[in-house]
Image 1 (cartoon, rainbow, N blue to C red):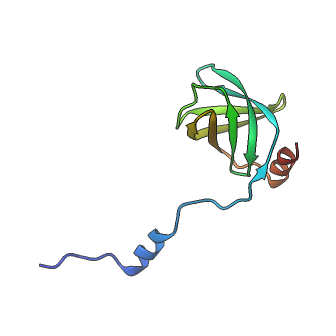
Image 2 (cartoon, rainbow, N blue to C red):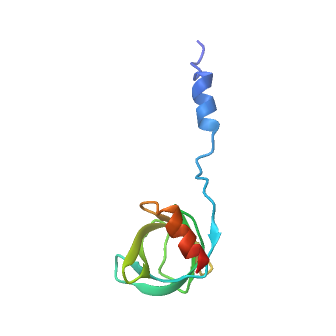
Amino acid sequence: MSAKRKPARLEAEQARPNTRRASRRISEAVATVRSTHGHRSRARLRDISVFGCSLACDADWLRTGMFISVEVTSDWTIQAVVRWARDGICGVEFLRPISDADARALGAE
């Protein structure tokens, strides 16, 4: 009895990496990070793209998979999920991508 093989077309589709390609911009903007549990901390945006950013902060409560709000200004808050956190730095993915113009503006600060 022989085993069934997957069609070559499906194998080729799965070989493609599951990553997003967007240019990252170095940033010096300062933001407030808030958790859904009420934790709050100041953070510095290290780099930013339309899909997410890297934050440097002293928040030891940040955990992978945690939903947070990144308050850039009093009028602008971005909802995000923490994808990784270690040594006072974390990477977050925005729940909705921001515009390229907004990413450029935050990168210029």
